Length: 52
Image (cartoon, rainbow, N blue to C red; front, side, top):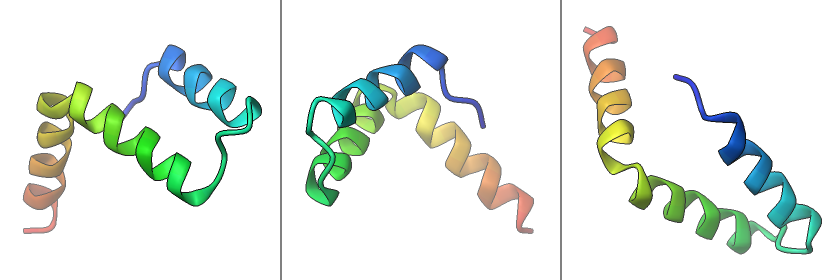
């Protein structure tokens, strides 16, 4: 699993700007997953296959 560096930097910038509560971070995560749903689903599929 690899996250784009630009996405990591964007997350860090949001947290640095004060959006760092647990609820804020969960919102960031949900937004990222929503924007990258196909990639996320692929990771879940790979993880499920690996546990078999």
